[in-house]
Image (cartoon, rainbow, N blue to C red; front, side, top):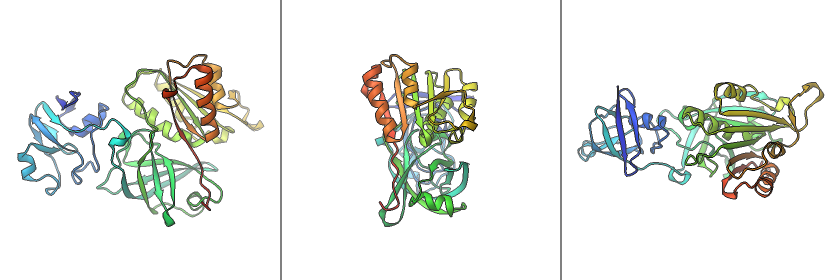
Length: 340
């Protein structure tokens, strides 16, 4: 059994099961309501019930008072529908709609699928959640007001642990300790979300994703977001690395391709080693796109990686393949040295 929930003023509507909170059902329908904790403590998801009845669920009495309820307010991270509902709440549709937060995190796991790449998973406090759009990044807040930025590799619906893909930079203020000293359980501070690199979901154009190295991280979040919400726009991922060992999650995109007929994965090695016996594509990753597409005028491109790759892709896709300049979205990775 499910109930129909309508959001005002947008008139967006979605179904909500009797065991789901309004927020959970909205997220499943890819409708973004504001939230900060998802357990009734912060009040970020508070909105008004215009019609219908709810079970208010478990919440902090100081966050939702009896007077709030008399005024028709509810916490949508806790409230479950008892009838069809009409609610009034602000929707999050752009990066600037999400408040930036500073939060402590605990390093939960550190895995090293390649010699110079760590997959780090961070756990937030039990009373906190970080709301973000697929593709955005967070800053680690270090001593002496230094920051280091890393993209979130987890899609927004799977935010219980935040996953980052971090490349070791020799002498790096953050990455040296991470690779040589950290064992897990370290407490750090992050700030986010940041960045304008996120999916534009109001389009039906096919999408080309171009990842260089650990630029795969935010694109992984974008693609898993699309798969979760059953987006059927055609999608092609080109992942460019130096050699086979640098393709640090080699099986994951192949599994996506098996499960999703509208998704294609094309790995590209720029400098394969003789032992790789590589039978696939070689050269520059953006050149592989140029070789495969003669006209990009009807596409969106999402690219993430080193600045030279981003610059070359932007220049050649627009000048040589007619990609509209406003349909090229990019996050250019720059690596900070320890002395900066």
